[in-house]
Length: 139
Image (cartoon, rainbow, N blue to C red; front, side, top):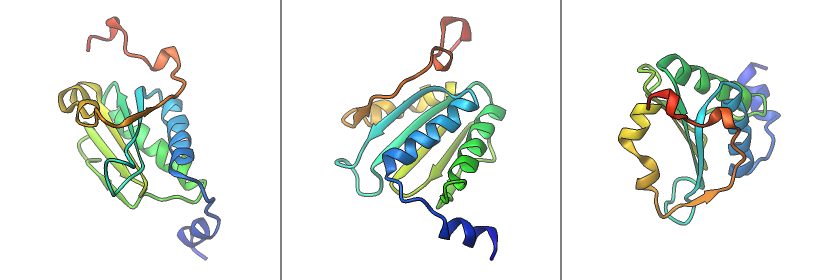
C-alpha cells in the first residue's frame, strides 16, 4: 500500500470549517499573518470556505503552504490542486470545499480578495497578536 492509498483509507471525515481550522493552526505555526476565514457557500458553487493568509516573504509563503499541506495530509487530505507555488508571491491550495490563498502581504493588498468577497460571511477566529500586521512592518 503506497502512502497515497494509506492516507486515503485513513481520511478523517471533516467538514470544510473543521479542515479550515486545522489549516489555520498549521499556518499560524509557520507565522502566517492576518488570517481571514470567509464563508462563501451561499455565494458560489465550488467552495464553502475560503481561508486567506499572508506571509512576510516569498519563502514564508512557501513555508506556510507546505506546513498546511503536511498538516492536512496527516488527517488524510491532499490538495486537489495547487497553483502559484513557483513564484512565492501567492499560492492557492484547493481542498474542494475549502480554498486556501496564501499571499506575500503586499500582493494580498493589491488583489484585495476581502473586497471581492465583501458579501461573504466572516467566520470568527482567534488571531494571536503576533499574527497581526503592525505599523512597524512597513506594509
